[in-house]
Length: 90
Ligand SMILES: [Zn+2]
Image 1 (cartoon, rainbow, N blue to C red):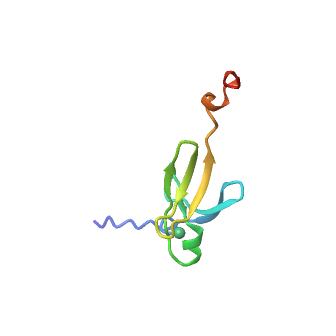
Image 2 (image 1 turned 180 degrees about the horizontal axis):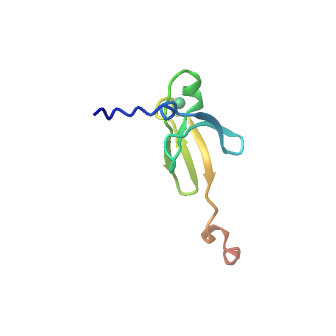
Image 3 (image 1 turned 45 degrees about the vertical axis):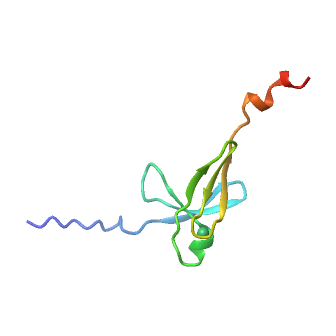
């Protein structure tokens, strides 16, 4: 019995252009349901698939390309009441 079930439609990962944040475009590959991989557009257009690494800072979340050091803003975190406190404006 041969159990070589080659996934016919699953082999090609669809890649689409994706707006990570307003004005910031990357490529997105749907390889898993849970977490999509974001690809560096600079490397992608140069023929290389480079998956962007998530880089989380205090106020921002970036996607960073380890190949070409490009950084893409994913989102800004809302300022906490530490900075927005109405009582700190004396
Ligand atoms: Zn890159």
